[in-house]
Image 1 (cartoon, rainbow, N blue to C red):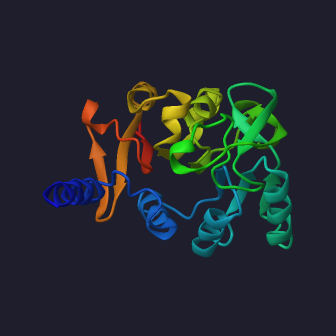
Image 2 (spheres, rainbow, N blue to C red):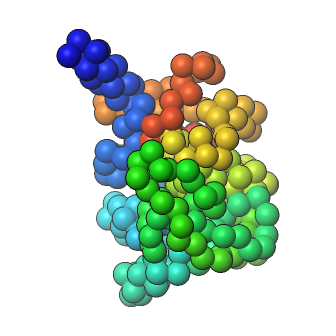
Length: 244
């Protein structure tokens, strides 16, 4: 009993810091993002759109915003086309974003799953089997940004692609200099892809971004790397470009 109480206290304290609190509320996540936007956004990018809940939240707050959704799953892409068919401001790309152009395999536990990843995750300890797969297209975002978005400034990017966020970021190239805010997820998927919080820390600080963790009571600015922050339970972070 005493050990269970200690575990509960540990979990509660972690959640108060935003650690493991990452799936609590899309509204709260986007509220944290919005506090960094000095004006109504004109262009947002939703990478890992799944069934469009995050894009719905963007449009609920900023109905005139142009949104590009990247979602490689065929079934989810079809659902997105149906959901946003009457909104000319929404573009749906049935592709995954990575650091290469070409083809890849999307693995999951079921068709359209929110757990789908470019890595075949090992989740038997949760009684989850990753035996479903489909072939998909992958692109570098920098190429798309230049060819389809005309190298336009981007107000906000949401990045939730189950452990491959760092691969995607490494494919942003020059586009990274034209993005104001990036929200990205870190957690158990990064165990499977062998990427660490340290990798994100150095990537963003070396590219002129401040980092924040989204917590129940607001944003927590992260001013230095600590091994204690290698917390592999779903957590959401914000990277804010430092103004010149």
